[in-house]
Length: 289
Image (tube, rainbow, N blue to C red):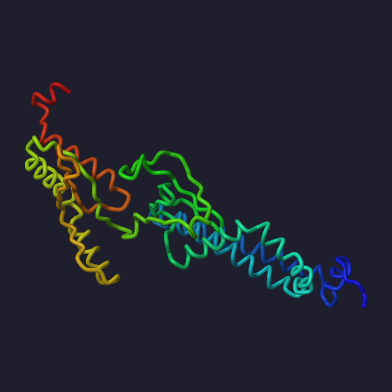
């Protein structure tokens, strides 16, 4: 029985096949996929109305084109590749060990896609890293950092690259699940010795004033979510709640609807209205400041 080596496998793999034809088909496939991707990308840039939608579609087109290209090249070279089955089987274990992390990253990417955990444009938190998703591929997710901390919504200008392996062992918080509107919650501490009832009323009035322009649209959207997801009770009217975590102060929780991406701006506007009402500019407090 003749001994098999790499040279004999290479010679056998081309029997009955024209290598020039295989290479030509591969080139045509690559050029075709890249041309279609470029055309679709230009169309998206021209027609998509919002930057986040454009970014999401462009990333999707890129990822799908890579997948189509890989499947197409696999089909073109299938006959040649199947001859190497014995060789590949022998190298399989070493390959898996050497690329274990990359395989886990691809598995995490598959899990993200199947579970629809997040998409480009969503604001997520994973492993204490928080930001807006600006790019997703088979191996990594890129975030534009938002902070500082969980309570702020300012973009820091830094990017965070998270390997998709984290999808397998970490909790992902998606702050943009509701897509258009969210119920934003923030807290304001007030001394118990002060007039906290007045402070609570001032916060509620400020929240109602800032949400008035989009309140009905938010209510309609929440009702749509209730029907589509089988949820109950998503009231959007601003409201306040009290917490007593400290014997010397009361924490007033404010819940208000806000368009996705504008939570921080709405919160700041409410706080400024509240401070203007509690401490008007012509008071002694403002003079001391």
